[in-house]
Image 1 (cartoon, rainbow, N blue to C red):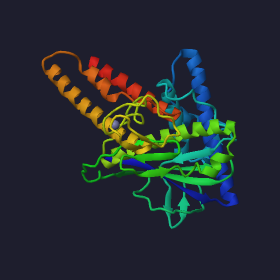
Image 2 (tube, rainbow, N blue to C red):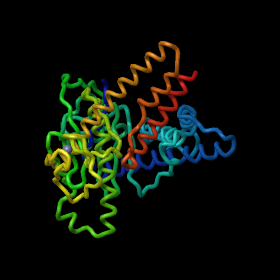
Image 3 (cartoon, rainbow, N blue to C red):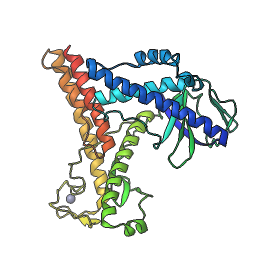
Image 4 (cartoon, protein in one colour):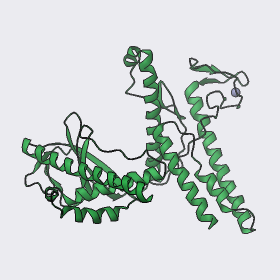
Length: 360
Ligand SMILES: [Zn+2]
């Protein structure tokens, strides 16, 4: 499958180049804000929103008007990309994925994206409209010729270039390996094979130093990290041709004995090993949980497969609708972070689209 990946390197512009970049950032920000304002006004008047193509057409006219000659010093691709970003922000808002687009401020991170006339060679970067070459530290090879580059400046004054590359990713060879993964607090990842991976960002010393308020924040950060990890696992599994499945957060993975499936009433967090009162097996809390997660995941996937078989039979006999099943297949698991919530909203949108298309 074709995948898209970003590669970010630090760049070191000279003072003169910084002035040039600052003009580019300003021009792109001006256009974004100008068209955001224009769209807002248009919406107030006739309750309609513009499109990228209408905006791009108007941009060409605008450049010819008196007082806007300075725009000819700005990379035209970067200006158009800024209109695309605005259009995307609008679409995300209408699909309830993001908040309404905000005006861009000089104090935020600055950036512009260009798609033509740029290149990278021997730690040197060239971009449109700039006659000199920018020093770049490229610590990794790019897998293909990049399709775009985004130049950015952080609020602390560091400059970066991020290249977007598209390339074919071969799935890994087929494998019968299966693994259950539990996301813990002390350790980030515990697998059904008994492997532990500690969260390097939360060392013991660091946790000791946290005050109550900070602890609350840290919990939030942990949730976001877990959400991020799940997103990464999901798409990396897809790239590699592997099945990823997330079980319900309500499944009692810790309290269930993996040998006899006896379920404990309680298992306080400080209990790390326990003995099943029914079959007397001694369990490591986390590994037992990961084993249960693997078992539950495999069972859920098997059930889904059977549901599909039944539904296919029903469909052949003309009973029921396909959308019932489709909805079940795209149902998102409980989200664990804001970011994940956003992606589950996207699934929600898709769900609607799928059921709509089947009703037609
Ligand atoms: Zn047991």
